Amino acid sequence: MRPHTPLVVPQAYFDRFPLEDIVLPELLAGDADDTFLEANSPGKQSLGRKLYNALVASYGNSDTALRHYYQAYLASIAFADEQVGRVLDALENSPFRDNTIVILASDHGYTLGEKDYLFKNNLWESATRIPLIIYDPRTKSVPLVDAPVSLIDLYPTIAQITQASGALSRTGKAAQLFGSSLVPLMSGADGGGQRFVISERQAGGQKGAMHVTLRTARWRYILYQNGKEELYDHQLDPREIANLAYDDEHAPRKRELRARLDALLGRAN
Image 1 (cartoon, rainbow, N blue to C red):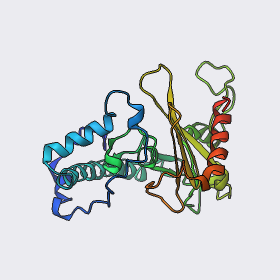
Image 2: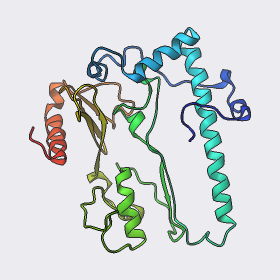
Image 3: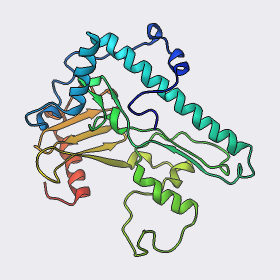
Image 4: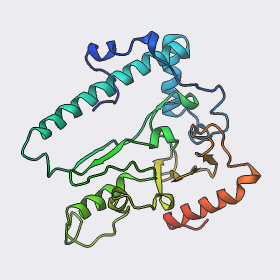
């Protein structure tokens, strides 16, 4: 459950991160001005903006508020990390140490004050990027893969590693598998530059309406339910500060990513 709200762990983990020692990231004023999540929350603030404003109001200023929140978040990460270590120590001291594949993942990231937002439920890098570590004891070298991958890639990866056969579905019937096996990347194959992944979140108002984002090795393109767009160049702007979606210079790139997204979703532009 950690790190996850409520950020409650034993005090000893808080003590590891004194408030005065916490170095906050540079959060730029007005960074949310060229974004459109709030415009897709009709008649009210998004939950993340509401939580951010409530946090700041409770402490009186953003610096103090975020120091307390980062302390709690770091304490929760340290607590979770220690529990993972306990499991791995038990595995290391068991008869299964040489034939057990370990996968460490999370369900989502977390926005911690960027763009005046706190929480998940957005399509920026902070909320959609997760830790993903796969350890196979048979692998002699351990490559670090810098490529877009998705949680839906884990099922075909496990199926290939375990050499599963037959219908890979709960009902036993043939089913289309989305995602692709990560085994080639784990083996050091060079193909990460061609990969892309999508993430979605439900839009308020219309039933079934979704906001969606496409992430390639370099670009993030976001399409909101109301048609507004965001485009970020991660090679030059890894913090997603400048929305390039309405910059004429990047119009061809935006059209390319929009066409790819529409094709993936099976819909006409």
